[in-house]
Length: 303
Ligand code: SAM
Image (cartoon, rainbow, N blue to C red; front, side, top):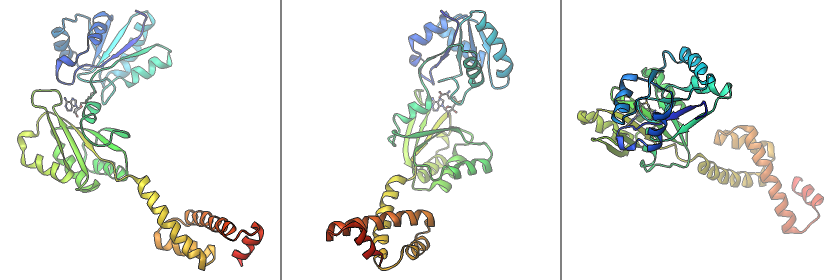
């Protein structure tokens, strides 16, 4: 094995999801960096993996990185695991990976479970474009601000949430993003009491308020993006264009820009540019319709 760091995914619940390749790599490296060595030692001993462990968590990652870099430079091979799922995804490892990259040390992924992607694959909400927001702030004000910034996001939104805050988080999401927005919750994915729920944000909030026994374990919250902006914009443009076209037949460009901008709340510059396009189209149309030389047609329309 060449000196490198393997970033190894571990199961998010069901131990059968631990891939044979991940086990073989952990078996063969010189050292495994784990978020919580006690937690990981259970997993490793279950699979009879006896490789030494060293802790790497958010409070010691900076100091550890220098030491791990030296080990790699001495020719050792390392693996990084977190408590569950894919390291670096709402888990430690970013400082280490970035440092190794800057020293041209190979970092090799050993893929496996990730709660966000696993939940996304069964949520029934659009999966073609999505954003991962991880955990929202634990502080109500900051959390509400974060949600406010996501209000107009058209991509599917993925969050991680703990049982302590799921009800408050859903309450804020319903208030800020809209009660009718569709949501999905994947709870205890791949575990004994796994559950999957598709409801709008209002009903999701109500469900967890009324079913306290379900507020246990780990949660992935997925929320649909706001209705496709592009579609709205297309429709808007169609409406705008016909409005501009009608007005341009009666009024000068400047006046049309001013009226339409006031009526629609759209920026004057944008309306002006659209109006110019429409006006040119009208001119082109007239040239074709009347089959007259371009210069003359423009002159006649301007007059
Ligand atoms: N690195 C992990 C991954 O790849 O998914 C995520 C680690 S993050 C510290 C832990 C959070 O992930 C939990 O609070 C929960 O939101 C989500 N999570 C992890 N396992 C889960 C599971 N089995 N079911 C639902 N959510 C889970």
